Length: 144
Image (cartoon, rainbow, N blue to C red):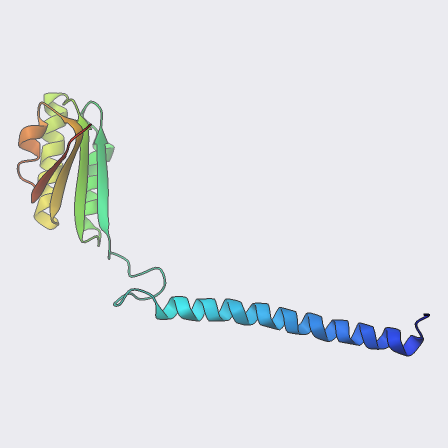
């Protein structure tokens, strides 16, 4: 059954129309997904990614505690940030006296600005017993 020119033209026209409607349906589905995402966002947030500062910062301290100027500056920046609170995770055998005192002073300044929770993950020896005493809450995670 040979195809005449009119049949070929009709098939091409229908294929173009079908392609148009397929592309339209995909774009519509993407728009619906974005609209639903905007409707389902958390109340009080400014958009899909939330408001800046509507978060809780997490600080992890592992290993030997030594004097570290970068850590002190980072904690000072954290105190001035818009985060609502700070969780400090500790897994440390302690450290030098100067390093422990420096970290203690930084965390104490941070505690003056934001709620501070200390979580002991494994080991918190030496200076950490008195370093964590000024926090709002202390949580100890038992290891199996």
